[in-house]
Image (tube, rainbow, N blue to C red; front, top):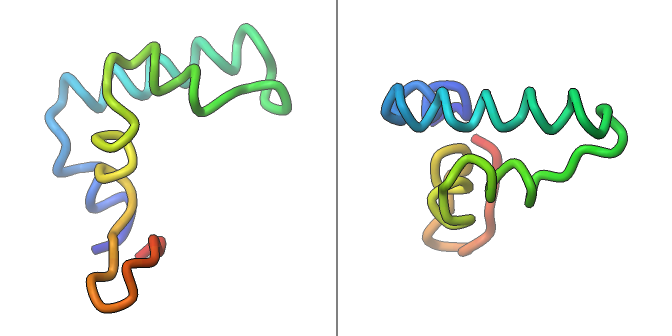
Length: 67
């Protein structure tokens, strides 16, 4: 499943939280200083939930891949 397709399957509340946290992070630190860990923390999601929203884990290889 493509990353944006996965993101569209996330609840509207979680999508808004991620996008709002990302926008605030970039506004405060700039694109080069932004931290995905701070975005995740500010969104109120766990790291695993955040990454599962965007990344497909391939079972046979157990490697994260952007699909």
